[in-house]
Amino acid sequence: MTAVPGRPEVVDVAGAAPGGGPADVRPEPSVHDTAGHAATHGREPLDSELRSVQRDVIRMAGLVGEAIERSVACLAAADSGAASRVIEDDRQVNEMHGLVQAGIVNAIATQQPVARDLRYLLAIDHVSYELERMGDYAASVAKQARKLAPAGPGAEGPKLEAMGTTAAVLVREVIQALVEVDVDRAKATSARDDEIDALYHETFAAILDDMRADPAAVDRGARLLFAAHYLERIGDRVTNIAEDVVYLSEGTIEDLNG
Image (cartoon, rainbow, N blue to C red; front, side):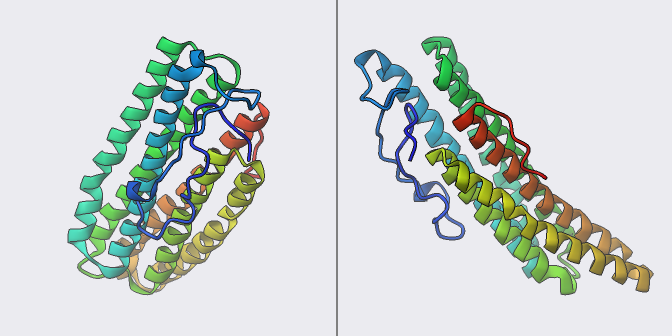
């Protein structure tokens, strides 16, 4: 595993139980310089800032993964109360995003990082943005679930739930790849976005067929299509984070959407 200044060695984000949030994160600090040697005393403040920023990103990812799972669960169960709670809890993701950004700004302003340290902070900044957008998508799925609750999602509910479950797993996997700066793992996780895309296309086609066959199903079908679209976008943003891992490791920008 590649050592990165100021980051915990191993955090099993991908292996967390479904619904696992910040409590699943148990980082063990291990500080190294860019050459992989023990940090000097002069690096300690920067290493501390980097550890803090990374812990916040991991916690943020835990909240996002949980929100995705909860949003599709309340959709499948036609539970409007649970959907409302998912929507309300999105503020926690936004608050964590603010903490991450503040930590990055503080680290840059006070420690003046260069080279790999600066690249790491810039990558984390983009990752936190992607996670914040994923949280918004989860809340948007919950909003559709709340509107659909009286009638339920119908036959497409299980496929949407499968999309969400897969998306949450990929969020945890790609954050683990980020923690370990594991390019192979990041690329493998990105490739699994194809699973979400396949479910999306199946669901999209089935909903369109229902809408064509029954004009009364148009309103429900449109809401289901919106929910499916939001889940598909989460998979795309997992790929964006995987590209950040490649950038962090190699300093190059690689398009993993192909």
